[in-house]
Length: 254
Image (cartoon, helix red, strand yellow):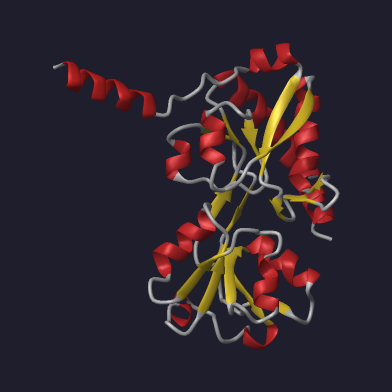
């Protein structure tokens, strides 16, 4: 019995314990809103070589903090650790192109949707008519590159069992893999496809798909506190209605 109890005790130590999330009252008392961002998903958030970060949601994070009467702190996270970092209370709100998914909604609150987007391929311009359906892509000879841990990898794993799928660790440099011929395509959200195609005009193009392969809302993902969600939703609803978010996104996409 003593051995069994010891084993059970050791197993208990290995279980990840969810940290207590900060309430809106605690955020205001502290004076800082911690916003988690991957910094690798333009035009929402992009960390530059000098360590600074820019993007539409960087602007929005500052505006949200101002509306709450606090300052903002950008907390680096990754798509792979996004959920763990939130549950460990490393940040209060995730911004920067976060897709609404059932597993995320099960553990934390989403704001009202910011926009709706969907997955489609970015390819070399010569191939824009070659990869227009999932079936076109899901072939052994097709080389797909994907960043780890987020909905892009989930989509690739679910839809391309026969293609050659390679996980590339740096989403800021991943598009060079396609541009320089080491991969045939990447499937990501439409906003990123359009942004990267403009940055590499004449080299990278959106595939000529009739529509996105799926649809998903983007929203802000936050710790469970009714007062925090109500405050974020109220601010965001006004921000969307005024056109301020659209202007920030358009500027970041230039």
